[in-house]
Amino acid sequence: MKKRFSLILAIVVIAALLASCTSGTSYKSADSAEYYNGYYDDVDPAAPAYEPEFYEADYDEYYSESEPAGFTATSGTSTNTDFAEKMIYSARVTLETTEFEKTLQSLEGLITSYGGFIESSYVTGQSYSSKWNNYEPRRSAEYVIRVPSTGFKSMINDFSGIGNVTEQRDWAENITEQFYDSQSRLNTLKVEEERLLAMLEKAETVADMIDLESRLSEVRYSIESVTSRLRNWQNQVDYSTITVSISEVKELTTIVEPQRTYWEEIGDGLSATIKGVGNFFKQAFKWLIVALPVLAVLGIIALITIVIIKLATRSSRKKRNAEAKQDSENQ
Image (cartoon, rainbow, N blue to C red):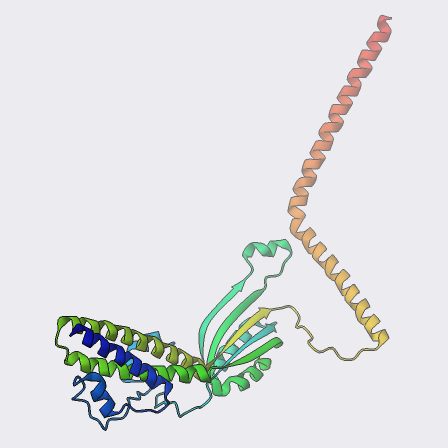
């Protein structure tokens, strides 16, 4: 009996694999009766192969806790005959600004206007001690944004209105084939799950029940894994990812230089040199003012040291003169 049951279970697995290789093929009731030897008598022969909706209630409830804030799953039936392209769009944009707080506020407003949300963000700046090392504090921020794919291109173009775009890179990944292959595998796993449940109801021995439940656990684990992968892909398809890096600068970088003549280039170089010399003396004067108390203390210490050395030298000289005079008188 156990060998017979093992053979039946093996045929179930083989039948399920064959189903994934034949698009849109339904299982025949006559074949089912022959394969399962009476275990499947209760199944409606006219019932079509099971094709689940992508977002079923049970799986929506199971995965709802892992969905990011602002994300709404797209419900509906997704079958292998519906070959809508599944594209994942991503971009990285680098901005610089002289008005850091204003740029951050404008960015958050832009995200809201497109119906997106912030997946992660951080803002950082130089430490307080760096202000005493002739460095002006600089702040930077990085945002990982999720925006509906319908507004992906438009939002990238709007970044130039909130800061100076110094770098922009965007790319796309076509996951259509992987998506529908996984969808087909999910359908096959669901068919196998239903048939294993039907066989479990007709199992006659404890050993048969244990074997069926073991295989059923494996199938359900695979269903959850494939469903999670499909949901994650659909999430990335529906909401594109944009990484925005923002730097605070004193002067904005000129991206496109206008055409300059030879003498204009010389003038630009001379102007840059004069500006550099001016900044040097400006920083040197600031350093002198900041270090003035320390220099004053060092000056006082140096003055006291010089006075002590002079007094010691004078005393030593008088002593030598006195000794020399005494020696001459003794002679």
